[in-house]
Image 1 (tube, rainbow, N blue to C red):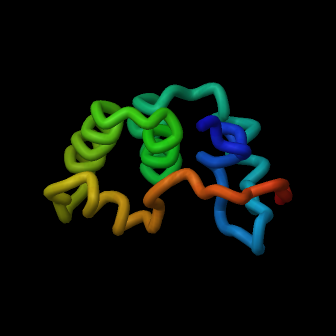
Image 2: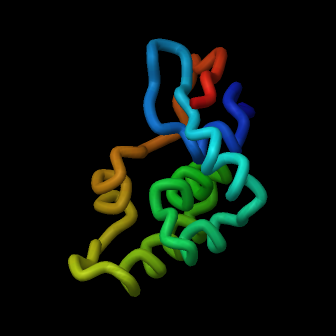
Length: 101
């Protein structure tokens, strides 16, 4: 099932207020056209993770983890650890609107 929130809104969400996603408008305008790998290479790991989750692509999640580990002092062993680190686990259901700040 297709999420109600767009990819660009999800990958730049900085929080939620009930059923509203709060989106970083500046980052969205600058990086919305980037691929998952480009986001990771730019060091935007939370956005890259969110992009891979939105795609539902396990290979993309593994690539984000690999790029993260190349630049991090503290290496993460699994994608689950990456999700825990950034507090992002799935595309949420029930988001009906966004607020851009």
